[in-house]
Length: 101
Image (cartoon, rainbow, N blue to C red; front, side, top):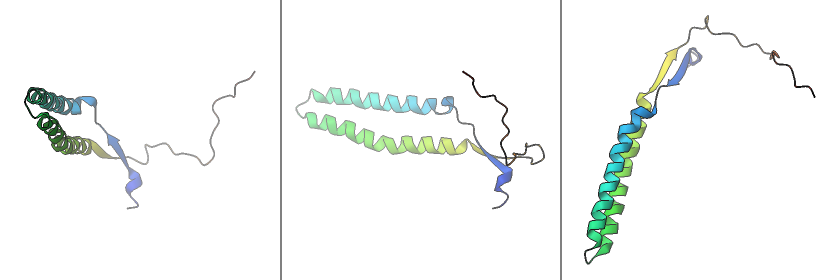
């Protein structure tokens, strides 16, 4: 465990990686709303609301699972060469001048 300082965690996730997942979930939501609107004209509108609620409740875990697994697939551990990494000194070096009035 003392060798963990030789590794750097890098996240390479971009919006394009989850863009398709968001589009598919929006299609599912719009289709459920369309089916609810079709059922709303029926004599039992409570079924329409139950359908939308059921689809939302059942689709959210799948969406969360897809996001989390995509995120975990884009986390990398990269080895850092200690000789190439600049050493940080114990006293900070002031390279900027303070503003003067």
